[in-house]
Length: 310
Image (cartoon, rainbow, N blue to C red):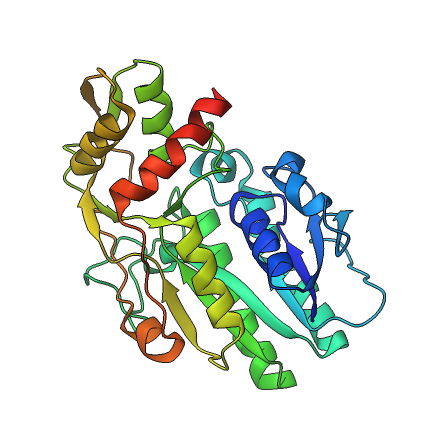
């Protein structure tokens, strides 16, 4: 059994990761200030005697008594709605929050896992995106607060690895979906689910031919655990290489929800990436991991949750 701190524990991914670590027999300390996370995501975790929770902002000094085996830094405002509303807080979580959690890991001699993002590749000119692709990111663009917070975070993790010999992991997470996503998240799957289930037309931005690759949360969590348990200290893409156009996604959502909604088109937001697909060759090779849940099956498993949220 290990003693593990998870920041962003009340969020979509953080809560699922807490549940999995508890199921694996670990003691888990969750930390969240609930700007975008929700305590009800941790209802199952609170039933477990090996779980404790700290309501705390990771950009402030962090004190955890006792030993820690791992620090998993998931705290972030990953939703476009939230990081546009809180750009400075987003940057502080990526910079100060990463610095504070790295300092804690150094103090405890703990393994450190940083959840980065496919957004470090920006609007890619290479498809699919391998880990050695340096990206096409505008540091002064409308999405820069999130993109640059993660790029800076990765650099800080690298610096702690090289300067302090810290045992680190970096996961570059691609689009993930499933239960516990907020309906007001702003990302395409909760948007489509809400519209389809309420009989509202699905809003597709641009011509809908831009692509994304969607990974079910259960696969993503398996990938994070595999990375944590490995000895890989370089960034690893964790995502599903099944690339779909947004038009295709809309049709699948209409099918699984049995909705009579139509599809409408609106103007594409500025600097919206045209393609997004992970090259997961490295994850297959070094983690023996690849996603197992097809898009249609994953969406069917998620419909009940979104209906409940409505």
